Amino acid sequence: MEADTELWQAADDLEEIEIDLLLEGIWRRYGLDFSDYAKSSLRRRIRHMAATEAVPNVSALSERILHDPATMQRLKSEFSISVGAMFRDPPFFRAFREIVVPILRTYPNVRIWDVGCGSGEEVFSLSILLHEEGLVDRTRIYATDFNRAALEQARTAMLPLAKMKDYTANYRESGGTKEFSSYYVAKYDRAAFKPNLVDCVTFAEHNLVTDGQFNEFEVVICRNVMIYFNHQLRTRVHRLLFKSLVPFGVLALGDAESLRNVEFASSYERLHPTVQLYRRMH
Ligand SMILES: C[S@@+](CC[C@H](N)C(=O)[O-])C[C@H]1O[C@@H](n2cnc3c(N)ncnc32)[C@H](O)[C@@H]1O
Image 1 (tube, rainbow, N blue to C red):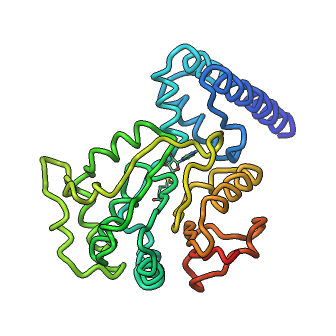
Image 2: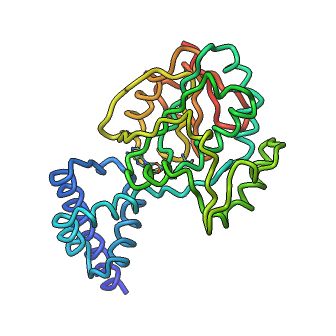
């Protein structure tokens, strides 16, 4: 029994070395730094990728990744976990409508940064909400992600038609009162969103590990992105988000996130008892 445990430990240690070498190789070959992503989640995703690529171990996967940029793009998609849903966590969108929208009405122009927008579910939801609240003409949404494939998908403004039933339920639960199907047309198995929903959106590549501030915003939405980062990278990103917010700007985080152990926590005021919405006070 003890011998078995030792064997497992040795295999784990070896895999740890292989993963470190893979990350080092990706950094040197592609300039992408994943060293501050949470280790357990990286390990799970690398194992999954090795299985789908049908290679026996991480070293074999490394070789393929270093020699083939297309495999690297697949790994990036694997790491980016870009699963999203429209009006995900409906109470968040309800609180946004009830608390943030009145704040936004006080600004002549509104800039929103949707950080880690994935394939666009969150940004389309936001755009629908802003249309309904009559704010879209004075708003520009900057939707960024480091995953080019996800951004390309987002730019098409199309999502699987099969998901619309769930998204309609989320929309209603979030306080939406219009006919949700009026926002898209069915094209085979896709729902094509009305072009005016993306007119107010600028999509761009931005990597939270390496890229810096590019504007100031009245609202920064960074939901379910930092959960994959370690403490060091989270600290870097929180600094970036703080610097990117105008005074009295609003920060939105995901349901499983908070400002606990964040250096700027005392500079924010919480706007809602349960939803992760904060206002930068100084
Ligand atoms: C789980 S999705 C969240 C999507 C959306 N914000 C939501 O809550 O529905 C996480 C997103 O973070 C992006 N992401 C991961 N690492 C990133 C990085 N270093 N820079 C920018 N985006 C990143 C992924 O590509 C993915 O689209």
